Image (cartoon, rainbow, N blue to C red; front, side, top):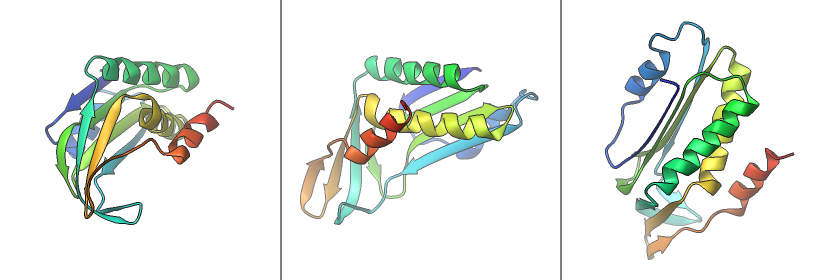
Length: 152
C-alpha cells in the first residue's frame, strides 16, 4: 500500500485505517491522521445534517494529484484518503487523511497540506441542512488562503 483513495457513502473505522497504515511498515516511525466530522453549527446557524456530492473520476484524479505533490515535497511513505458522500448526520465522519513517514515533521506537514488542498481543489459539493432550510456551501476564503500559503 503506497496510497489508497476512497470516495464512499459508508462509514469507516479509524482503528482499521491506522492499522492499514502501520501494517508491515517497519520503516515509518510516524503516523499522522486527521478526521473531519459533521458539526452542529456553522456560520451562526444550527445544522442538523450534511449532504455531499462529488464528480466521479475527476475527484479521484484531483486527490491523486494532491498526494503526488505531497510526495514530491516531503519524505512520506503511505497515504490514505477517505472522503464520504451522501447524507451524513451530526457527529459522523466526513474525511480521513492518514500519512506515514520516517519522522513526524514530514508526516504532519504532508497531512496538513493534503487536507488543505482537498478543501479547495477536489470537486466536492456540500449542502447543509440548517434551521433555515437547505443551503449549498461556497468555498471559504480562509480555506483558499490556507492552501495558497503552501505555495510560498
